Amino acid sequence: MNRTEIEEKVKGFMVDDLEIDENELVADALLKEDLGIDSLDYVDIVVIVDKTFGFKIKPEEMKGVQTLGQFCDYIESKLN
Image: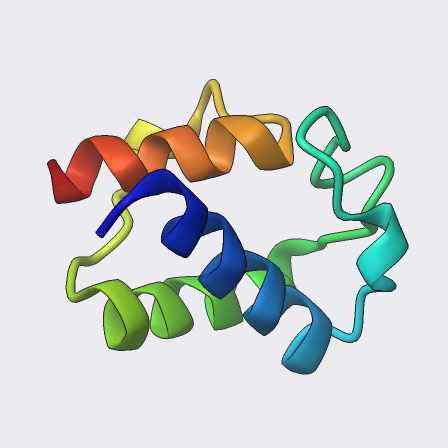
């Protein structure tokens, strides 16, 4: 899966499942501050990523992930 496909899938579930405005989904958007993702949303994201990409997110690996772009980088690194 290439980077564009990863970004499309991530944006898709953020719009559909987390009800985030698609216009807010830019690479440097902060997950918590800009997109309003809270701890309950993270639980949903863990389930969605496992179902969509086939791996489980480890909380310790997400420590430095603050932006949407970094989140996509993280997924890309796990897939490749």
